[in-house]
Length: 141
Image (tube, rainbow, N blue to C red):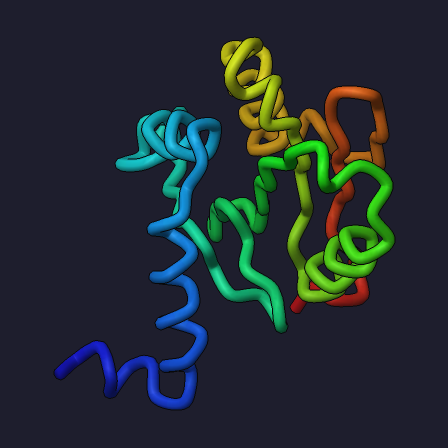
């Protein structure tokens, strides 16, 4: 029973993360195929990591990077801004890419993720096809 002893009071979040992993869409499924097992330049990613009250689509703990795959329902959503700010305050940089871009511009999406992992993206960037929000230095330990 190692899992329950380690997770303790986080069991509801773990159950929710497991549930979210089963509801992947085609873009998330493809991206996970590219990120899992240290396939992207040796960086380890996990899916549906709980951060505060939210769950990150993909997260690299080594780089404190969250990658979110957004569909059109995320366009200009105030809730997403608060979600990003919460993750930033908890020490996570957030990279948001569009679902359609994951499916049609795969190399570009992977190159952007690598740039964030390598520290080449280090400033706030908001463009039509991508958003990068570096972690707040206040939330870092």
